[in-house]
Amino acid sequence: MIKTDIIIIGAGPVGLFTIFEAGLMNLRCHVVDAAPQVGGQLTEIYPKKPIYDIPGFPSVLAKDLVDNLMEQAAPFKPGFTLAETAIKFEKKDSLFEVTTAEGTVHQAPVIIIAGGLGSFEPRKPLHISNLSNYENKGILYAIKEPDVYLEKQIVISGGGDSALDWAIYFAQNQKRKISVVHRSSLFRAHKDSVSKLYELEKEGKIDIYTDSEVVDLKGEDKLETVVIKRKDGKEIEVDVDFWFPLFGLVPSLKFLSDWGLDIEKNSIKVDNTLDYQTNVSGVFAVGDINTYEGKLKLILCGFHEATLAVQSAYKIVYPDKKKSMRYTTVQGIQGF
Ligand SMILES: Cc1cc2nc3c(=O)[nH]c(=O)nc-3n(C[C@H](O)[C@H](O)[C@H](O)COP(=O)(O)OP(=O)(O)OC[C@H]3O[C@@H](n4cnc5c(N)ncnc54)[C@H](O)[C@@H]3O)c2cc1C
View 1 (tube, rainbow, N blue to C red):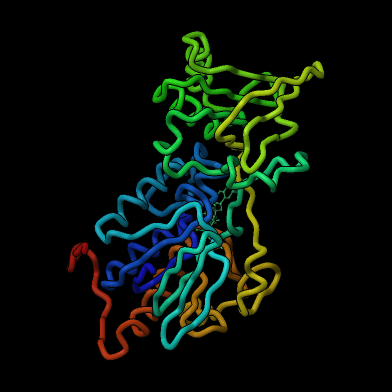
View 2: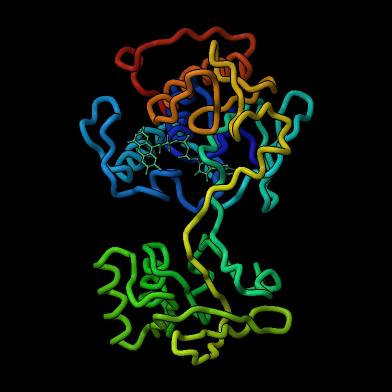
């Protein structure tokens, strides 16, 4: 059980800035995100694009903004549960419990939902009919603790940055040869990564199967073999301990419908006259996930919403204390 003052669901830019604003109020945060990394849409969809409407930054790369937000939040020592989707919350006495699909339970008097477009979930190779038989029995869509897989037989599918970054990591760090399977002959990943991949192939550390895809899976109780089909129709069987299909993430809002929140147009209705609280007292929604009249889905609007939400969160966490707003230029940043 992870206990904190505020559970933030969503580690996009708005969730990350919430940590900072909460920290200024002496409130501790723990952030849950379905994606294996922080940054939400900025990391997942447009890390290399410049953003021009963040106050004080004439231009900032999305990835750099995420790095800066993490640096700004660091003094307040936030906790993170990454690669886990929050699927339910319930109130027990005066505390909420948020549980993830993986079973991690978080407890706090306040929840701030900064879920954006929804939880980023792995894009699955659904053309494989027996896929579900091997999920978590040799198939993993995110790599949380890479050292666990060193010395294992690994196949990675995908042509983007994530697939190639991990392929290079494993090829450089373990003795066994790994395999990379990609549907096209061209990789979408950064060109330096593509060059490195082919260098490692020349060194005999990687087998690369381009114009190919995994079409079938075999194994008794767990995955033992992947069947790779090439464009010319030829099939190759490769023995595996783990297959990582890394095809990127897609947003899903399916969790919202079960949470007892007022929903309008796939977004959570909030009180924008005060503090962006939902119809459930103690549960706030900020950033792209909320809706109210005149809502603008912009990062800076989410930052404002988060700032007001934590003022009310303070009153819930410390009902008997008064806290007045002070400028950071006056009180500085007193981290935990
Ligand atoms: C191509 C593009 C360009 C853009 N350009 C700009 C721009 O120039 N300026 C601007 O202001 N805005 C821009 N935007 C919009 C901006 O990206 C969003 O407003 C911003 O990302 C919203 O931040 P957020 O933190 O609310 O949500 P998100 O960034 O969507 O992050 C939400 C996070 O919540 C997680 N999550 C959701 N549900 C759950 C759950 N149940 N359990 C666990 N985790 C969950 C998701 O995995 C995700 O990581 C752009 C958007 C796109 C797509």
